[in-house]
Structure formats: C-alpha cells, structure tokens
Image 1 (cartoon, helix red, strand yellow):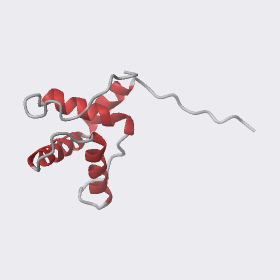
Image 2 (cartoon, rainbow, N blue to C red; image 1 turned 180 degrees about the vertical axis):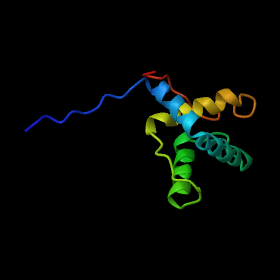
Image 3 (tube, rainbow, N blue to C red; image 1 turned 90 degrees about the horizontal axis):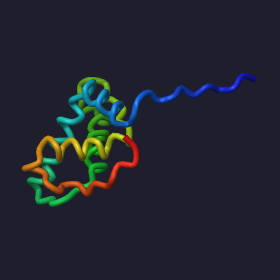
Image 4 (cartoon, helix red, strand yellow; image 1 turned 135 degrees about the horizontal axis):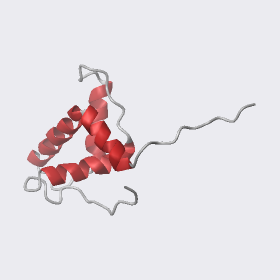
Amino acid sequence: MLPIKIPKRRGTIQERFDEFNETHPEVFRSFVRYARQARRQGCKRIGARVIIERIRWDHETKLWTESPPKINDNFISRYARKLMEDYPDEFPGFFELRKLRSQ
C-alpha cells in the first residue's frame, strides 16, 4: 500500500488570506456590512467569528447568488485586523486582538 501524500500548504496564512480576499472581495464587504450593523445596534465590541458565522449562514441559506466560498477559520483574525486597519476611525478597538503566532 502506497503512503498517502498530503499536499503542503503554499504560503503563509497571511499570503493565503490575501489571495482569498482578492479572489472573494464579497466576503470582506459582508464583514464590513455586518460589523457596521452591529455597531449601529449598540455593540461596542463583538467577536469576529460571529460575523464570519453570519456570512456562512448567508451562504448556506442561499442569500448569495454565486456559489459560496469556503472561509478558512485561520482567516477570521485577519478579517478583524483588516477591518480595523481599513476603517480605524469607525472601528477603534472593536475586536480584541491577540498577538499573531504565525504569519
């Protein structure tokens, strides 16, 4: 019996996130939209995972017209960081960020 060869992941988490984000910009647009909705409803802080799970829910319930992308859990903190970096005046401290263990 031949051993099963598991392909190595290419690139760092950040590189894979950047590629995914470029391929699926609709995910970040939804992330921003839901973060703004949470802010309008009075949330001072929220977990980024909650927003990602809402996006996944939208995919599963066919609220998206195209086939849904599979969002890697490793990208959740990257979306939180990107939101706070892209909209620093709108979302200061909106997510509690930990030090990245890997790039």
